[in-house]
Amino acid sequence: MNKQQIKALYFDLDHTLWDFEANSALAFKSLFKEYSIDLDLNEFLAAYIPNNNVYWKLYREGKIDKETLRFERLKTVFDRLNFPATNSLIDDMSDAYIQTLPEYNMLFDDAIEILTDLKQHYALHVITNGFQDVQYFKMRNSGLLPFFDTVTDSSSVGVKKPDPKIFEHALKIGGVSAHESIMIGDNLEADIEGALATGMHAVHFMPLEKKHPTHYIEIEKLHELKFLL
Figure: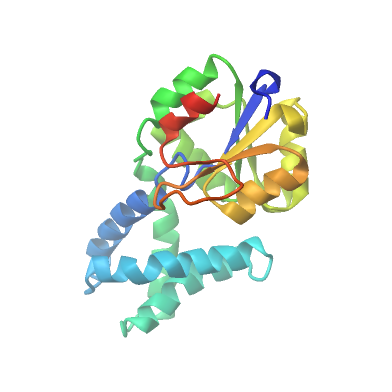
């Protein structure tokens, strides 16, 4: 990667800038109280987090639709924990979760600081598989929106990362070529391998994992970008 050629940085949103797990825990804490869910929150989250990842992978691969994702990721956890949740309750909680989640705005450490610094040198963009309306409110409420020139979401483009078409669309509206751009994200398949297959450079952000020998460029903290760029 020739740093002198880089003109644009493309960020994933959830799990990269916006701390999805922390905000999701706060949202569920509020919903458990509102809906009188008699479950230990930590036990629920321990089951929900990996389950949510499984259903997002199915959604990303086009094997389920948005409605199935939102319903089944809750139902399967309630079933596993033997909590008698009716379909009506799950539907209500699913909708309430989507509405409540953007109200919480925890970002990863140094997110605003590093974006402020990078904005002086590069055009900044977002590519996300998240839903357009939800992602907009997350970015607006957390103060991220002003940093980015464009936001490309899968629901608008009609394909999800790692499909090359979403990266190509983002590059086109960003006005840059692939070799002039870096994708920064947490998901090895969707963000990193997807970007590399399109000809972009990529940085794998791993806030919850330890570094390990790999041919990918990896960071654990966002401030490490200062030493790469």
